[in-house]
Amino acid sequence: MPTYRVWLPTTVIGKKMRKITEQNLYTVLLALVILTLVVAANAYAEGPEWPELLGAQYTLIAQHLFPFHAAYSGDKSLTNVGDTEETQTFGIYTGMKVWDHLQAYFDVEMFKGEGISNSTGLGGLTNGDEIRAGSFNLGTGPYISRAYFRYLWPLGEETVEVARGMDQLPGLEPTTRIEVKVGRFAANDDFDRNRYANSTRTQFENWSLWNNTAWDFAADTRGYTEGIMAGYVSPRWALRLGVFQMPTVANGPDLDSLLDSRGENIELTLQPNNYATVIRILAYRNIANMGIYKDAIALGRAQGTVPNISADDQPGRVKYGFGLNVEQPLADGGETGLFARLGWNDGATETFAFTEVDRTVTFGAQLAGNHWGRDEDRLGVGFVVNGLSPEHRNYLAAGGSGFDLGDGALNYGYEKIVEVYYRIRVDKYVQISPDVQYIENPGYNRDRGPATVVGVRLHLEY
Image 1 (cartoon, rainbow, N blue to C red):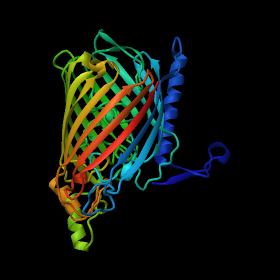
Image 2: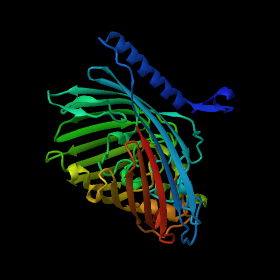
Image 3: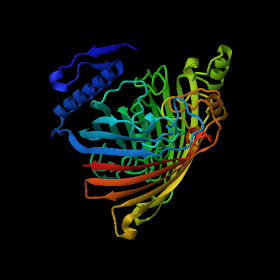
Image 4: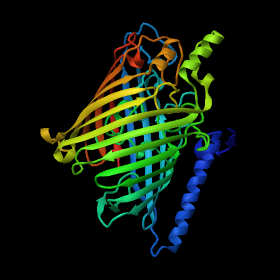
């Protein structure tokens, strides 16, 4: 893919040169098209509505990994000598009503810092706010995270009041509707959501506890994609379909054409008892330029080299999987409740976009602080068991590496994680959360660990 170099004045941004890829230019063009259509629509509206600031946030996550036992280490191992790192994210979130049922959203974010061990050595990475750049130079400047239209087609007269939020305009929305989103956003904005385990900035920090890590959802390195989501939504059930662009290479920053590769997703949501229990059933299929683990092993043996999954990449390869997601409110208006996720993928084809997990079981609870006189505080406890397919573990045992894992060898065991956080609401805008994670068999390797990570999160939100 060609790369364009744009010279920017050093007096303005203090940079000599900034690379802008073809994909970034496409995103900027998409944003300009959205703004043009919004202005044109407002020209015909009785009273023009201007973009609203829906929210802003800053999150600092600092983590320390204590030294732990390791019989050996590889290039992608969790560092066993200890590490201390921090990440910072900044975000501004805007939206506007274009006309009666059409909304437009535009978000800008910025990331700085690094995850512990350079975001390697675990299936369930410890900091969900980290961007796993690898060898890609993403820079530390602002970037467009979301730029999309949202259309709501009412299928009845009943409405519900929704509050202002990031990527949520306030007002009345039809409870039964057809909903369509088109543009740039994150696949997990609409799929695999869970009330108690959904946001790394306010809830659990481990990747396996804010998402189903066996769902290798379409995304670029920063976690965003471009595509379309369409769904039927009603008070008791919903069905959503999504088709999104896959990266051109594993964990890559550039997105491929939907004609060449794509992530296809379908999710059924059931709310059988007046919004209490929620059950989500997810299925997905990815088509991309991926490798097959057993073929990579055979190729390495034939060449007398360590297997390399990317050397076996071929277009049109298919990966598929399933997920089950449950949330069960218990008390306190739903602020106290239980959650669980199950995830499985075929494990034969290369992990391409999210993280190296082929099977996962997670469960836990959130407890509201009113039980000890702190109404706005929250305590969360989560448990994780991650696993690999036989093909994936054989590849790692033969010395192969993915973008997360590679100890040089593997004495396989389930990766087991326990996380506990306590979110302290300082005031309306400020939260501080101490966090502890305990990990057995990091990277699925019985010859390494256990490892312990402690951290603190500062979250400012408007």
